[in-house]
Image (cartoon, rainbow, N blue to C red; front, side, top):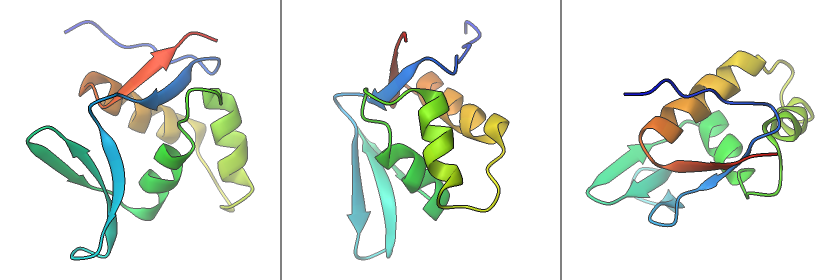
Length: 94
């Protein structure tokens, strides 16, 4: 598998076949991918709610800082990189 490099100017969005929704049964946000359900923690859901294809990775990190006391940039990028590798998130170059 090729190494994925995520730039702060990339604009992430959910892939067309992926949906972010709230599961009443689990009382958590989940990412629905064909034949897969990923249960998200609160910060993961917050990141994905900002992935609209318009905001850059840097803008997402800035927005998260307004809600959370501390947001390690490398964690946001690592989370998004994992979802890009799983084809749940797509990137548009900034």
